[in-house]
Image (cartoon, rainbow, N blue to C red):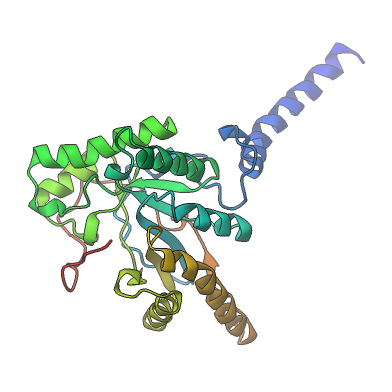
Length: 291
């Protein structure tokens, strides 16, 4: 083959490679050098894209039915692995908001929890900062906020080798200007919820399922669902909730309506184009022990 013909073909092949490379990586998970990523669960391949975003209020985008599973307060070496196995089996995405005190120290429990966090990330699930002690941010001064946010960030980065950009305030309370400024100035995207499993108020999988059913009746388009991977009955309720979504989706399709989609944070994230506005999420109806 002459060099005159070879050069255009080589350039065309290079262009095709550049176009397809991100798609291939997104389909295999090779960018993270892990052996098994279950699509579409590997939403952390480009996790940095979730930084510097607007507040996510947890409601589904217009004209969509969706559910995003989020789990707070972990990781727990006793309960989180069972949830990861079920998520893998069903190939569903999820986001885990972790507390720093569970990762800190040289003890056996902290070591096991760090290993679970590493497995969570290796399997492709998003991770977010949920503070160190799970206390109310609105009551803290700048030094306290610095510890709660930055110590947890450092522990997560030490375990995963990368920084995370999603944040969930304990109890869903982020109102005081000092706390709001502390979160947004660090590039975090705050994530709230549109549906609450209230799994800490019950102690059976059936109780959690009943709560989620009530939330779906109240919010028929779905949204971000709050759960806790530290509660064994909530972990056990997860497959029941997915089965419920599948049942409802089948009924919707039979009526010619849009079914539910299980989504990750890409369905909600929007860039923060302006400085954080003074508008704040609604205050919880009552003080929350969980969240």
